[in-house]
Image (cartoon, rainbow, N blue to C red; front, side, top):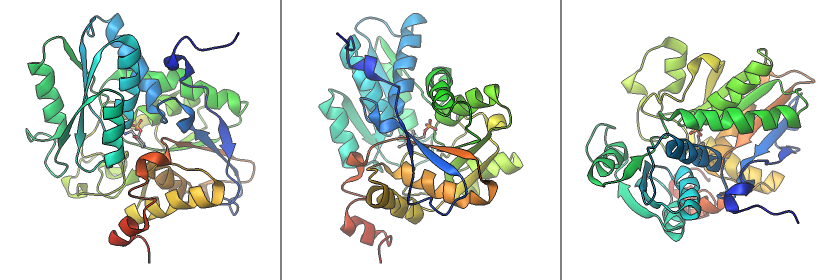
Amino acid sequence: MKYAENILGTIGGTPLVKLNKLTADLPCLVLAKYETFNPGNSTKDRMAIQMVEDAVAAGKLKPGGTIIEGTSGNTGMGLALAAVVKGYKMICVISDKQSKEKIDILKAMGSEVHVCPTDVAPDDPRSYYSTAKRLSEEIPNSWYVNQYDNPSNTKAHFQTTGPEIWEQTNGKVTHFVVGVGTGGTISGVGGFLKSKNPNIKVWGVDTYGSVFKKYHETGIFDENEIYPYITEGIGEDILPKNVDFDIIDGFTKVTDKDAAVYTRRLAREEGMFLGNSAGAAIKGVMQLQEHFREGDVVVVLFHDHGSRYVAKIYNDEWMKKQGFLE
Ligand code: PMP
């Protein structure tokens, strides 16, 4: 018999899928690392279980403990899976920009959810960073995950996602393109691929309203770069420790409209029902096309599933209200 001991045993080993229509004019092969096949429907399952296992090993998370995290939803889902299977309580602190589905899904998985305002500074006591930190100080036997600075986040992708892409492409991958939030995915996968072949180029996809691109190009943390934006999952108003700027060759910024429109195009032209950052990532690939040559193998990672965006990206009224649909 062949079965997993529990649902956590199905994390990883996701397929690599060729894009056929959207990227037809590009000279290279474009392959999607299709992370929605993880049990929580996103790549974040990988780092969630790694962070929990490392916290247990380090004695930070003890039996009967409470896991607390500020999360846009996908990390919360991964942590909730781990909490259910391993017997911990779970509290997610989320910003009010996130889709209602993400909040309902976390509750369905047994998590307590606190919703905080988006448009306040990270050090404001109402921000989700501050709220998560405060709760972890108030609740006994709790552990604050902090995916932004937790090295197990990058480690999970260095040890699993990176090697999978290397093996699935027989070492032929030439470029890796991915949206950047905490930085765990780009730093872990990019770091692993460059350890195998330093010539592989690693590109981050950023949003307008986020600090990454300017910081990477100038070394300046420019507060003028920070303003509200709609794209979910990528871009930051802080510099997380998990973003390893040294292994990143460059960033490209994708507009909210393009990210939304390309998310819908992935569904209708490729049959890929994905989240908002997948649209940003594939538009990022299109924007970078002058860097790609015939014979190149470009891998783009798609983080999460479309089900979390049905009331937004996949809703015509919402799209019209944002000015994304004419
Ligand atoms: N896309 C989505 C949908 C996400 O939830 C995240 C995580 N914030 C990212 C992209 C960015 O991944 P990372 O945090 O590893 O940089």
